[in-house]
Image (cartoon, rainbow, N blue to C red; front, side):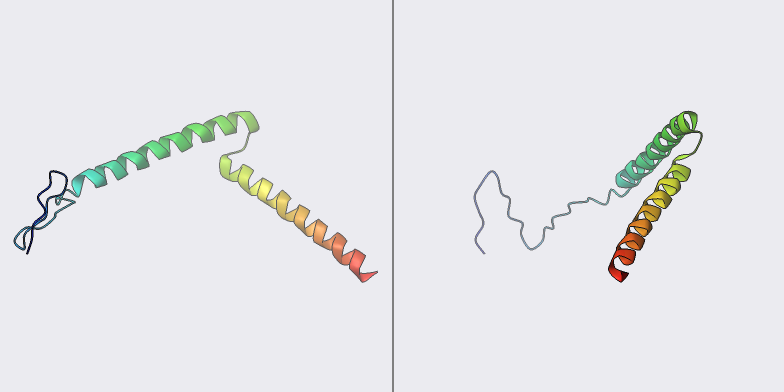
Length: 86
């Protein structure tokens, strides 16, 4: 087996292993928990702002506008169907 003599690359022998994660599962778990907590507070902050300005929460607004969009699509399909059936 020939080894590369280079400062950039270190070729491992058969007795060495490249342990990328290093067994440090705690750090990614803590980061995920931190992101989750920050996301929760960001959502609550945004939801409170939407409630104050519109009187409805984000899910209520989303369902209202989704219903309006579906109604518009349905009306458009009804118009096309009426036109084609003439």
